Image 1 (cartoon, rainbow, N blue to C red):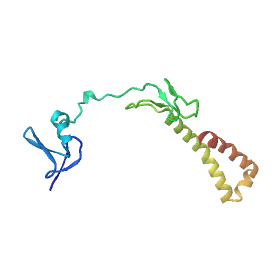
Image 2 (image 1 turned 90 degrees about the vertical axis):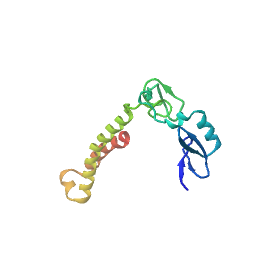
Image 3 (image 1 turned 30 degrees about the horizontal axis):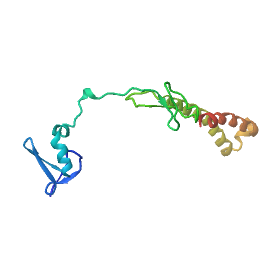
Image 4 (image 1 turned 45 degrees about the horizontal axis):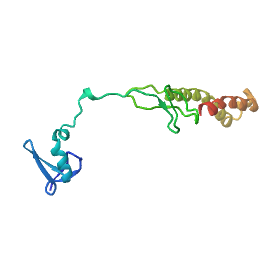
Length: 156
C-alpha cells in the first residue's frame, strides 16, 4: 500500500483504493470523484502550480487604519480614539515602520537613563560607606527619581 498526494486538494490518497485518472501517459490518484471532475476540467491548472515571476506583484499602501477601531486615514499617525499607532491597510514587501523606530529610540534613551539609577542603587546598598561620603541619601534618591521618571513615564 502506497500513498500519493491528490493533485487537486493535496490530501494523501491510498493508490489502491482511491479514484484514478490517466492523463498524458501518467496515472493520477484522487481522494474523491469531485476531485476527478475538477482535474478533468482543467488538468494544467493543477499540474503547473508554479507562478511565473512576472505575475508576482507587491501591493501598495492605500491608507492606514487602527487595528481596534474603524479609523481610516491616508497618512500614518495615532488613532484619535485609543492612541495606538495606525497600521497600513495592505502589506508591502519593504516598508518603513515608524512605530518600531520610535520604540527603538525610546529603548536606548531609557537604557542610558536607567543604567546610572541601577549603579547608584546597587552602590548605596552594597557599599554602605560610598553614598554618605559623596552625596546625602536624600540627594541620591532625588537624582535616582529624576533619572527614573522619564524611563517610567515616557519610555515605558
